[in-house]
Every structure is written in structure tokens, then in C-alpha cells.
Image (cartoon, rainbow, N blue to C red; front, side, top):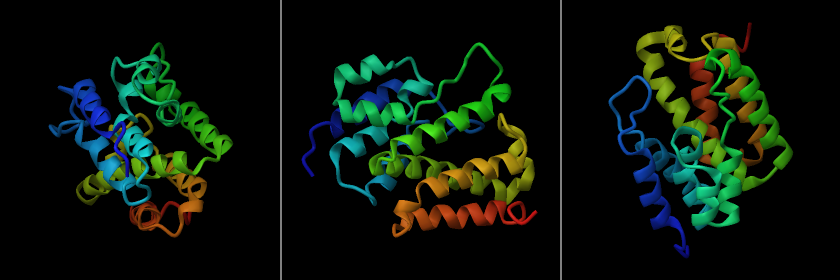
Length: 192
């Protein structure tokens, strides 16, 4: 792997996420993009894809703009970051926009039909579903009360849609691990 952007992306992400914590925890937020990057590394050794993994939440969750990403990184990295960036509609309550944001994101991923996008998405959602499972073990379905969408059936719809849209990666351990957690958390829902 030629490391053209990786070190810069790591430093950029650390700076962008400085002081942030994961929701409902004291865990530094930067550990999530690092975990996503580690998962992507099991799927690709492409420096741009790994760099995008580190940067995937900078535009959505910090003051960084897509213009900042384009000015500092390649067009491919910018495309990958943008594929993961939701329009948060900050003028509206998050619980009222959750479904439309997820539908738009899933539609964008489906239309792009790009394996690097799918790798980034799978890694991000695997990191998230791992965190959900850790809480699910202790809280059960009460876990969803912390989210903008508290209906487990809606959460299942979203996570399962990601599974289906990343099916091209079904030979990877990451895809099977994601499916495993999906079944552990939502096993009862999908049969209703």
C-alpha cells in the first residue's frame, strides 16, 4: 500500500473530532473512525479507502465541509466521504427526519453501486452494530430508546437494508460478522 493520504487523514480526523465523545459514553469519538478504518483494512489496502474511513464522519459530525475534504484530499476520498454523509436537516428535530435521511442514504449507496462505497458503509455499520450489541446485552430493546428512531422494527429495516446492499461483499468476514450481530439483535423482529 502506498500511503499517500493515510497519515494526513488520521491527523485531520483526530483534529476534527477533538473533544467529541460517542453518544451516551465517555469514549473519545475518534475511536469509531479508527475502528471503521481497521474493518476497512480487512476489505481493502487502498490508501484512499482507508483514508476515507478515517474521515467518514468529519463532514456530518464536525465543522469540516466537503470543500475542506476536497481541498486536502483526492476526489475519490471526497466521493467516499460524501457517500457516507447524511443531510442532517439541522432545522428539524432528528427524530422527525430519521427515516427520510436513512432512505436517502440507502438510495445513494444503491445508485452509486461502487464496491469501495460498500466497503466503507459495511465497516461503518459494523462498528455501529458492534456498539449496539454491547448495549443490547445489558438493555435489550430499551437500547433503542436512546436513538432518534426508537422502534426496533425500523432499526432492523435500516440495518438489514445495509446488509442487502452490501451483499457483494458476502465472502468477507466483515459481512458475516455484520449479519451475525444483526441476527443476534433483531432475530425476533425479522420473523414477526
